[in-house]
Amino acid sequence: MKKNLLTIVGPTAIGKTRLAISLAEYYNTVILSADSRQFYQEMSIGTAVPSQKELKSVKHYFIHHKSVEDFYTVGDFEKDCIELLHKLFAKHDIVILVGGSGLYINAVLYGLNSFPEVDKNIRNKLNKVFKEQGIEYLQNELKAKDPTYYDKVDLQNPQRIIRALEICLGTGKPYSSYLTPERKERSFKTVLVGLKAERDVIYERINSRVDKMVKMGLFQEVEGLLAYRKLNALQTVGYKEIFHFFDGSFNKETAIEEIKKNTRRFAKRQLNWFKKDPNALWFDHKTDINSIIETIDSKISGSNR
Picture 1 (cartoon, rainbow, N blue to C red):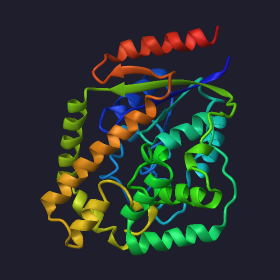
Picture 2 (cartoon, rainbow, N blue to C red):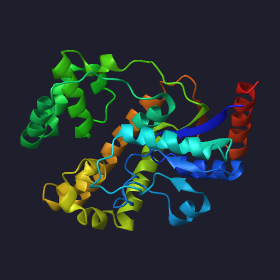
Picture 3 (cartoon, helix red, strand yellow):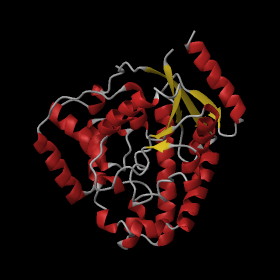
Picture 4 (cartoon, rainbow, N blue to C red):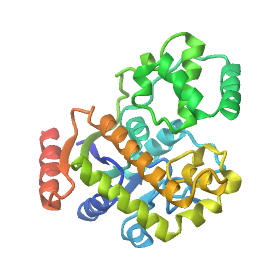
């Protein structure tokens, strides 16, 4: 009987952490985080890292295991995660993977796409353009050269935009043309569980979470990271807006509203990404945990027949 990786996805602030912990307690298992910003030990408030109580209730992996100064790619995460799963499945029939970073989830479930080698000078030139003309210029370039990828990439992540443009310029073909449906064979089965809600509910939860983060000391956390603001790990919603506050571009109220606005946009991209998977089991965020468990157990039993 194959082991099962129970994977929980959905937009930010929907309740993925709470569900993951409840399921981990029920199945007596552990949790792997696939949130690419919760990896970094210097970032807690703005990344909504589980509380100390939550972390103690269930064993978590891939939370605060790196520094913002470390170079850690999605390929590194795929390798580390698959190696760890091999060990964990020796003890558990079910392991839980949870997160809102679609690329990192897909890397574990299906593997990464292969891209041709291109001239390294292209990336150097793009990095220079980014420093001199900013991310908006790169966004417009990507929109012109690969509108398909432009519609689904995190437009606030310069590393991903530069990577896509690097392939576009180096091969003369859109980056999205190399994103094939080919999947790596995994030694485990996947049960994909998605949480959803009406758009206004998601937006309300996002706004409430941002306000809570501010009260918890988000501005102070970001102030302590000013020296690292150029690092890729800090090019993320909730941090870059407050950097603008500290350099005088935004007042505090504007920074907070920008965080809310950009988080709502991010949540929309998350939903668009995850809804493309036809195998996902979707539940309203208020669904009773017992109903979710019943559906999961039925799915696992059916796949093992």
